Image (cartoon, rainbow, N blue to C red; front, side, top):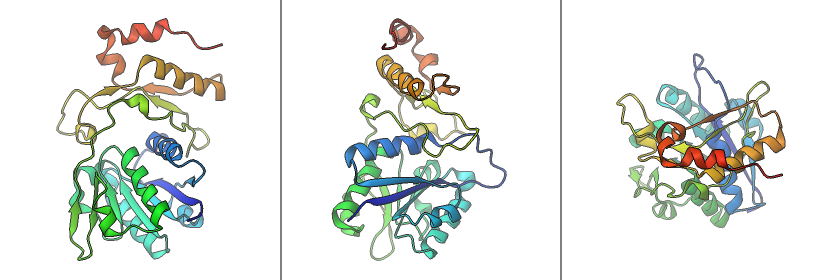
Length: 253
């Protein structure tokens, strides 16, 4: 197969506040490109119409629960438009894998980098997503030849967050939107109204060195870096030496 064109988009409804680009897409892009350098072209779209116009080989749709009807409609529209592979991800399909629409080839459950990378590698290797091959991919839901939903074994989360390459903070960023970064994943609490603990079952942190390196990469692109830093790190690790380690480090140069 020649270069694989992958378009990523996020389902939203008309009352949603789309305050910024999805940094998760920047993580997927960086992780997959490291696995298969030069074999993939990533594209970002805001709407199904834009995605179709880009003529991708794969459409990845991310969705929360309040947007899932829109995500289902996007998957159906992509299928009608002839996009060969449609992949669904995000909080809703992770919490409710039995809602996978028939128009989607598969759903990625939970943290997506390793799982999506394996799916892309399968496409590049075989040119298709056979049900026999999908059965061996951990962390997905799909339909077998009879149309029955199959959920594969769970995929463990990435143990060391520093193993994930620095994301493309500007992927899909629109005019007026600002780059931002995450210093951790997960939450120590289990609030019934929040999907965080379903998506990320434990709390993990980037090292102070990695956080500084990521800040430096942003500052190299824009010395003013008007964005923000998000995560539970500063809330949970102040007493562990993490904050002291970060403040003791100095930018290179």
